[in-house]
Amino acid sequence: MGKLVISMDGVVIKEVQITKDKTTLGRRPYNDIVIDNLAVSGEHAALQMAGADVFIEDLNSTNGTYINGKAVKKQLLVHNDTIEVGKYKIKYLVDPGADYEATQILRPAAPPPAYQQSGFGGPTSLDPLVHAAASIKVLNGAAAGREVSLVKVVTTIGKPGVQVASITKRPVGYVFAHVEGAARPTVNGKPLVTETLQLKDGDVIELAGTQMQFINR
Image (cartoon, rainbow, N blue to C red; front, side, top):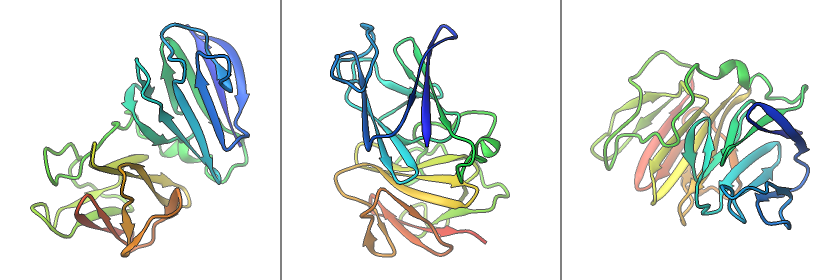
């Protein structure tokens, strides 16, 4: 079970266990987590549980929601992520004994970007191919044949504003999740109906009109 440690200027204000399917955060008194500060919107963000996973979603707040310094719309949280709302910092921690607590060890020195496009339909910000346990290979379009290593804890792919998904690196494997867009991505021709899906070697993802194959040799 995860928990949130809320602080301001280095001083811990409160700790909150995440126990509900949906936990709201904002300035209004009816939120589950109330932060009475003008920099925080009335309904600022929501945390949603999906099994052992916890997503955070910005609720069109005025000043935005940030994860490790990057603005996000919706993102799967991993152990030791720092959420920023206004001047408040909220550390997401997974209780010892959880099956993915080792995620902290896998985190690179630099925080992952909010969006990391895969080179199709616009400029790319993907890192060059390096040795890694897993990668995605673009199968169609202008970027067909391009292979990109999944070296970050969270790799976000797709076209912001159209369709976005994330692949999260865990000690037990790689988890695929829908982040943004009215239409859900497909895996092996079937729409993603759950919040997350464990990827297997050879799975074919279709996202924003582009097909990609997950490779985990």
